[in-house]
Image (cartoon, rainbow, N blue to C red; front, side, top):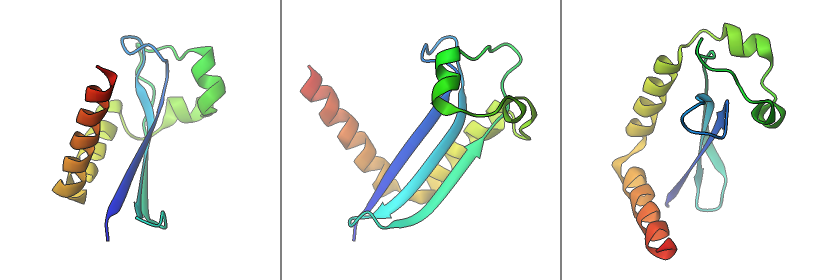
Length: 107
């Protein structure tokens, strides 16, 4: 039985150089899309980042959550990396193969 890894990020801005990841969600499901596990991470807004209005309308994360989350951006990214790495190397290999196929199709 194969596993499907779905990752969703909510960010403070659509421009990479001006924003940050605010929330990350990981869902692991089987090949019939039955959810086996979920993992959600949030962090507080960096003091140097001002979220765009458009992003706030999309992610709808309340301001008090953006200001008062208990994890820093670094702590959230580290936990996300550790969790993703702990799943299996097979999933990460599949993700790299899919990314490579997308690059080939786009060129």
